[in-house]
Length: 185
Image 1: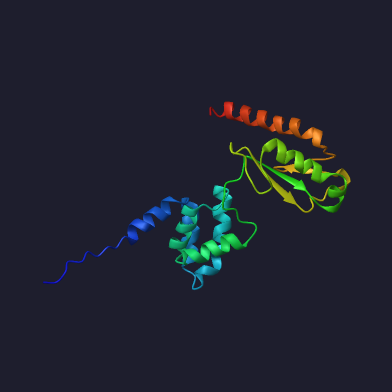
Image 2: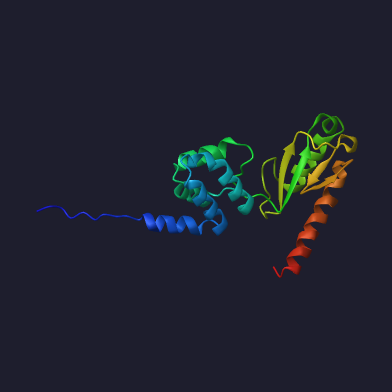
């Protein structure tokens, strides 16, 4: 008597879950890229689109990209972890960039950064537990005459001192609360 074997072909289920993990626009883009003889050459562009939509590259989205583009998941993960631009964790609602260029550093950026870390309870590259702030360092924001500077989203705050940090953070907390009330959250 031959043993009974059950063939499992879950390809359609995996494809369905992959499509659900992404937006229809991203899926359409991947499907166009997948038709290329060198589909994997589009991986960085695909990951940029995924991150632009979701704000980071989550495991579910990276697995979906691997499935739909038909590249190994290890290659997707390798690319995502190799390039500094890609983020594997969600960023805060407000991303704070502290300029650590020469002019800012000489004028006290390190003290401002230390105060930010102290007030937020995080270090560079981290996000507060409430998801409100992420803290990052950058080499130059091109506003050396205003040193030391920080940038929150796309707004520059110059001539910063450690003592100004708490009020600036509070201003953004209040802004988030107002926006949440307006949106019914």
